[in-house]
Amino acid sequence: MGSPAASPVWEGESGDEAVFRRAPSQEALKTFVKTFGKKVRVLTVQEEDWANSKSLDLGEIPPLPNLKKLHIVGVGHVRVALNAKTAPELEELRLFGVERVQTFTLRLPNLRALYAEHCFLDASPGAFGRALTNCPKLQTVKAYKFRGLDGKNLCILPECRILYLHRSELTTQLEIVFAPRLRRLSIRASYELKHLRVWDLPGVSLKEMDEWGKKRAQAIREATETQKEEQKKWMSGVYGKDEAVRRGWCGADEEWKIDSHTKFPLEEHYKAKKKQQVTKAVEVFNRSWEDFAAAHRAEAASSSSSSSQAAPSPSRCLVNVLNVTLSRETKEHLRNHPRLVPVSDEDFEEVDSEGDGENGAGVPREGNVPEMEEEEDFYDRELRAFRESDRPMDPRLDSHMRTIALRMELHSRLEKGLEVSDELIDRVTETRMPGPGKKRRRGEHPAESSASGASASSGSQSARAR
Image (tube, rainbow, N blue to C red):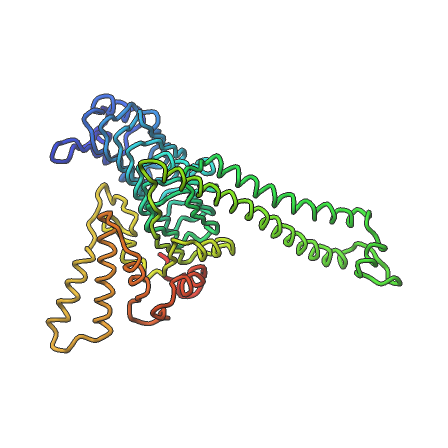
């Protein structure tokens, strides 16, 4: 097996959990898997000395037929390429402190949970979305500072309940084609993520979505080129004083020439014209897209009603977009979406930490997952303290307890996979913790009070992002 530093420690009641406290070399890892591959069910590869971090290629190791959990901690460069042949039973994948995830290709039929923290994805554009799509049983995705998720990140998530991308810098786009069971979506403090879509289109492939994206880009390019060509005519002299007089840009008795003084208004004019043309092109595209989406939804509804097993009805979903500068189109998409409920950070925070790791990312710390204080314990302690005090309970604190109880109920039902009524979601999102700051009026729709505030990236909200 090589040096003791590269030897694993066996843990677990059945002795089937292997923990490397120092990351092995690629050859040492291959040798270990060849010897113990059928035995190991939990594998942790951890580099305690980050200055001595190594590179590993998970796609170049023998199969691990019984592996259920894989944790990679503090390894410098990792190629993550796992499929049904190399890890057919893998249910949980955790990445922590990986300086470069150089490949991210997942085709795992049984993966239920993906956790990542303090990692940088250095893979092809859209790799993150494709990886999620190729894991059809994926239910939970939690990431904290998982940076560089380049590309459109189109993804199809038929079983996903939770998707968190907290502080995912250098990530600009996320398009969820279909995720009917999604209940919580957070892109909190992913500052560059301006483009977010949730389409609810069953049966549409990533290839079809990619084609529509290309059509949109082509429409914008054509609108831009039209104005560029006309501007070139001015700069080259094809258009001169006669055209300038006709457009009212100069008088008949005035001198006309393209210089630093006239160039600026020309550029401003065509900048405005280009914006008009692009806006018009996008509007035309959007009408075509909506026709396609409506037709596809109708077709999917018809096929599901005629089949013995109908497709699941999409669930309402809480969306946290605190400290994200969303585009105008994205704000409109969220505002008009029939099942997305934009909520503030206060409404989201009780269910934003899952009790399986700091920042809610659920990643291992030094090979272990520390237990956080359960929400029920907090509630019980607070309530007991008030009951044992000599003074009566403050009415505001009484309201505070009712609010916590409501959120505990929502949290519990979501964790158990139980149905959550619209009434419960409305009660949770319409109440706020007492304290300083602006309060939403009871009965006010969350989108009215949080959509505009969530898009701001300055002031007191910015200070709250970790």
